Image (cartoon, rainbow, N blue to C red; front, side):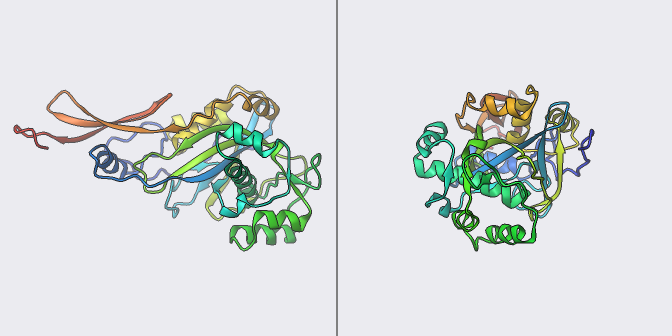
Length: 314
């Protein structure tokens, strides 16, 4: 694992860019203004899950991160965790171990079918994007190796949606180990974004015997890095991240190992975090948009907008 973070070219920034590595696309100011002025109708968010995969490194846990390809339509060039959208088939019958669906429903604040789908998406997407599988032959074991050609064929079939996750588990005679996940946070993509996700963040420890593989078609680089090192690189503007990524990294910093983070997950507040955009006077006859994430003041941005004329029109 590198002691210093990898370098990363930053995407295009607006005329007043943040000094840190906050992902801030150049089209955001106009979309924010349009939302604040009632000219933009928000699209419904799609349910998704992402997993902060941890392994102990001697100086605290390290987290597995991927850099999204520059060609990606959403968050290109940003560092993130393995994850993705819920497959409608994730709500079907699936071999299950760990806390009951009812318990997960209470924890996530959703119906049982939705809770199962979100947990399934977390485990499935982790396997699809890193080769790590949180499943085993029974409720007390985990597969030790997923690197063979047959495993890769199944992983590719899952990515292509030629195989459902339930079918994959049944074929392998495995059960999903929901007890290996800890729910950590929930963030909803801002209403002014063209692609929106209602994303649950989980923590999980890298199972013994397994290793991550650089197999995600959405990433051009993977890295194991300590949360403190990643956060420091973000603060220097060297690593680009979306607000929920850097926020959850900072939240992981106090924990001595993966087990401590997993234990703490049970007490985490899962109230959704959703950005707010509003118009306010700038004190000089014009207006500005204020973009904020409740409870996360470091991400607040002030975006200048058109100055009013003497008649009051912009």
